Length: 158
Image (cartoon, rainbow, N blue to C red; front, side):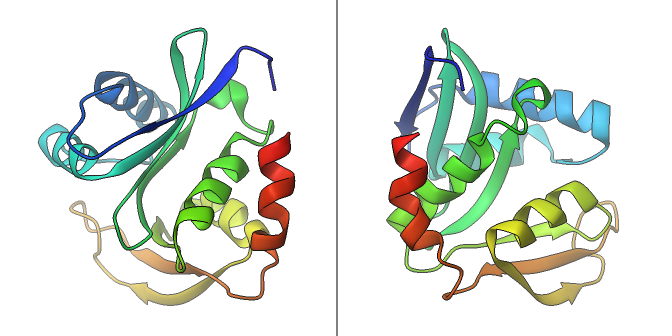
């Protein structure tokens, strides 16, 4: 990861990076057909969340918007920064703040499912017609014995 990458936390009620987060999410949606949301839903959920961000030279390159209960509403990493550990670090930050970490992922989003499963998330159930467009989702939970807590400090040092 570049030395110019900073991690930041945007607290609930803030609009900091909301436009950048929307733009990143929309670029991923356009390129990969995932992360489909209505803008008003996205901005409202973003403002209600704690958002962990990675920024390089003032540009948002990854973020995780998380509810108080540890549920990840949105997780996005700019495609040109994937494979550099940013997604893992975002999950580690969330896991460091919450006893339980959960999320949903589209059943057809193989990249997301591989990513979450690699980190120790377990599929708890399938939910048919979860998304507005009728898409199905898996409900995922970070398993208690994943060792992520042990790896957390390791990930944060890098």
